[in-house]
Amino acid sequence: MNFGIAYFPSKEIQDAANSYRKRYDPHYALIPPHVTLKSSFTIAEGKLSEVVSELKRIANETKPFPLRITKVSSFEPVTNTIYFKVEPSDEIIELEEKLHSGKFEDTRKHPFVPHVTLAQDLTHVEFTDILGRLNMENHQYEDTVDRFQLLYQLENGQWTVHDTFVFGKE
Image 1 (cartoon, rainbow, N blue to C red):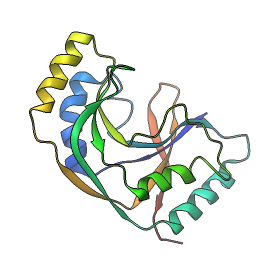
Image 2 (cartoon, rainbow, N blue to C red):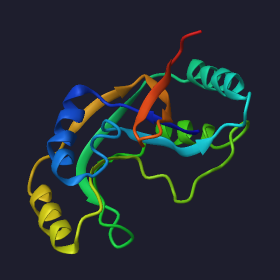
Image 3 (cartoon, helix red, strand yellow):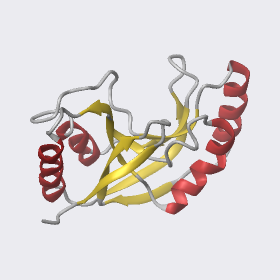
């Protein structure tokens, strides 16, 4: 079974992202708008409780921190993915690092770029048009990261929450 770790931003940010995702993201129905903290990984048989305990420990040690979105960006030329760019803070970088070290395998394939996906799998023409339009609009949002979720993937590809880990709680 595939697992992942993500942060789901405020309703305001999710609504803004979904206004684009429902048209331009084929994964729209599979997962709500989110910031991926650890991409898809597997957990060995019988080890889920250990993973949950470690995630609780990390959440307990973490203090809530601000999340700022200041613009739209893309992963061009690697992919035609467009996203809300989350300003990298020391706190989000440290949290992502904790989820890829210690008891967790480093499953990273790319450098960490915190973001909320708006559009992906676009043709070049669609990509250029949509990115141009989005760059003319103001996209400034603030949120407080005070939790993260352990997700698992269902057989139909949809992701669902297994557990939520609130910062600073026992």
